[in-house]
Length: 260
Image (cartoon, rainbow, N blue to C red; front, side):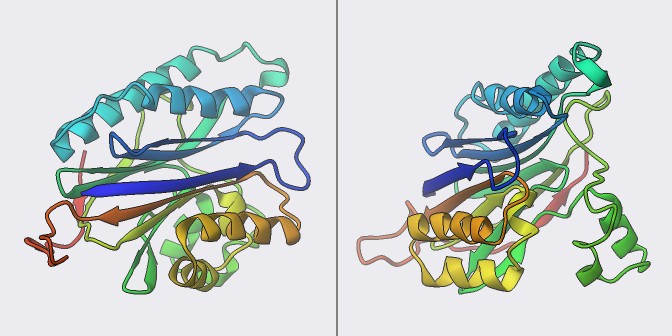
């Protein structure tokens, strides 16, 4: 599976520091967005520590090997951040959400902790692949609030998993089927708090990748962008297509949850 990406980040209209970081490794098949927390350089350092660790993940032809290497890198980043506890004024703890997309050998996987998200667009329809690790998501799951109430809930910023918070690191992973023409969107919550799923779907379906990436950022900015905004889009093409563009193998086994 071949893939190309388009990425953009912006500090937003309120914050003075961009605590988001991202990495796009088209050659390896690894893309990630990390949203730091802690403020006053702690969040910036945290997200950078995460993507720096992901930069060391070696190329793999097997999705399970790539997934294992990615989880090991995230665990290393987690230990590094925990070791920084007490080094920041005011008791600030450097932590970061993370969401990672992996594609190799015609297979894909996602790994995440926190509320940064991955969406997949297929045949014009976008769906959220990840599930937020957040307090409000737990309330939604327990049917205590409606999904449409989650974004405006007073505890919307409270996440339940992140890099740099505790040992051992607890991430969630999912093996995902991938097909030629699929487009993936990785983003921080600075985007998803301002654009609906329907708006994201429309932009991904009607615009080329670079245009959609920058339109999403621009839309967030004109709506006030109280948080940093980061977007990484990935477009998939199939190496196994024959010279007439027909798929040689398009088996679809569906998404499979990996339990660790």
